[in-house]
Length: 214
Length: 164
Ligand SMILES: [Zn+2]
Image 1 (spheres, chains in turn red, orange):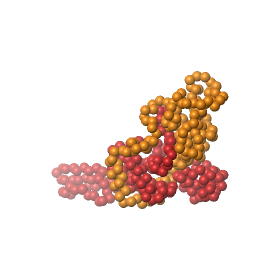
Image 2 (cartoon, chains in turn brown, cyan; image 1 turned 45 degrees about the vertical axis):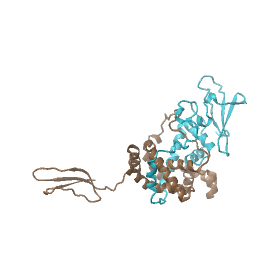
Image 3 (tube, chains in turn yellow, brown; image 1 turned 90 degrees about the horizontal axis):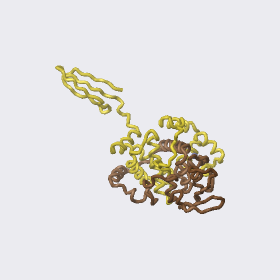
Image 4 (cartoon, helix red, strand yellow; image 1 turned 120 degrees about the vertical axis):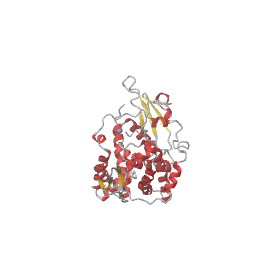
């Protein structure tokens, strides 16, 4: 919320508290010196991860990159550990993930995926490259043979943020044990059979629970 | 080209989570190149993965982690040279092919140059080498009843034990 401060004092000056930022500063010099500062409260609104990643991509902004690393590095490390890396290896793959993030940031398109999802897929690919002896052939989005999508569904016309919100809500609505099933399939990539082996829920139940969300 | 058979969600989901084996990944990736519908499913699976990822409790990074990363982003990329792309073919060199690129890289030939082996009945096959011992990929070429330039390629796809 922008606030205007005015002063009739003879001393032009800028009043700044540490939690305020000047978004526009006009100093009107008339006979009587006046100053006018436009300030914006709520400076604490941080840049979103999407904004940060776009900055890295467009201007190689190191500061934005550092913020992104601080925000999501620990998450990538947690993901690596969740799927079985020890802390040292998890740390290493996380660093490699962010090196790739730096190099590929220019390809990030916020209309196609959120920054968090984009970084998640990079982390996933780094882990595969790192841990698997065999190759993992992947779809090449620039393949000229790609059959274009000419029948966009409502899902595609929907804002990325709307999709994320909807999915978030439906995950949050799930009971704890069903959330676990979802986590095992989407993060750890276990098959239905493996999930029922791991947590002892019969295959049919797992499938029907998954269909709630997928 | 349209495809009528789609991999089960289970496969797409494992592909999205990165846990699918090489052979199956090849089949799924080839299919995805030709099937916008499954690409949308994949995007949704990745979005869900990203949301679950975002909800994980953080693990503390070492204090000098950022410094390490910043030091390394200044070095020239060694990834490109040291086999991040382990396949010998230069991706960019392949401009036009009747196979999806991911498949073309494995096969090493375009459709007409594949060393097809006849399996009778007008059908041909070509085995695709992978390091994955759990499954085997076979490319099948089956003559279409229809004639004409389009139908010649319309029946080719990766067949991993003919499961879809
Ligand atoms: Zn499909």
